[in-house]
Image (cartoon, rainbow, N blue to C red):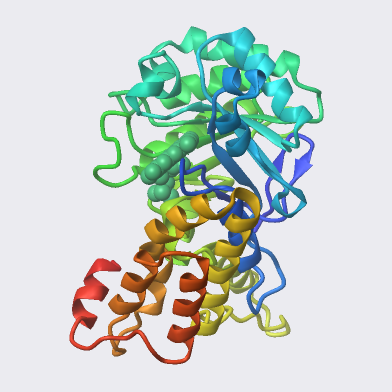
Length: 377
Ligand SMILES: Cc1cc2nc3c(=O)[nH]c(=O)nc-3n(C[C@H](O)[C@H](O)[C@H](O)COP(=O)(O)O)c2cc1C
């Protein structure tokens, strides 16, 4: 629904936009940056809900440092979904309780991950091949969780058949799942092709037909796949009829995409509502270079604070390509030298020096602009 904040169980989100779990990318520091980027020259919100990487419930219960690092959240990172993967209902249920006790606003079950490490143990999207098991896991988690903590599931269209999601979604809402997210591809597709909005629509219609008259209200369906800007966000909402939109890869280079997608919905809503007296609502401006560098600086500082120098250096070197993309504006000199200097930086002082030099007008090349723009698209 265009411009309508999402209600998931007892939790009311500020918007209908969600930051997707993207393992190794959407860590605590990045999630905070996305939330803060939603406020650039704009005070009406953007990110409604963010999500952790997929978490091993066994790792959480054992207290493994890796799992605890992935599950880490704080007051700047609310509301937050914690996503669990696995195939053993009792362990998943204990993991769900752990998540609720450690700050999760919402607990999500991963039914879409195509990675061998996860599917070989019958978890992730393998659950789409065993509907009974998927339903047992969801039922066990729902029973174990406190009532006020919503349970959600994120799935693909199916393993190889793109028509499996509607039936699974309907079985899941029957056992108390309070929102369904659908990535519009099958597992076989991995990330090839484009997200199939017509198939997402079938899930929306099936869940709406089943839950539309429930006294607690219909269960929302969240559309996911290939949304990168306001145009694709509005297309997802219109063509699928979904209640919310989840954005992943598009946020990696444009963490303010939630601000823009929410603004576009509000502007669209006003257009639809028309009326000559309606106050004018403008789209927020593109962030300036200064604002983008401030976001990169903030991301780096948060990583240093949360995870230390080794982690922060590794991440900034590998993520600078994504985060710097919007700095390559048409008609301007190449930013390749800037990205290269950050990639080769020896320590945080060198990263900071590169950011400062770029802002002062340095670290730009000539002749590579076309190449950089091609890389950025
Ligand atoms: C590198 C990578 C890691 C991902 N990790 C997760 C994950 O941990 N849990 C999950 O449910 N989906 C994961 N996804 C899938 C995304 O959440 C999302 O469904 C997918 O990228 C499609 O949305 P997008 O086109 O907006 O990126 C991952 C995707 C990528 C590219």
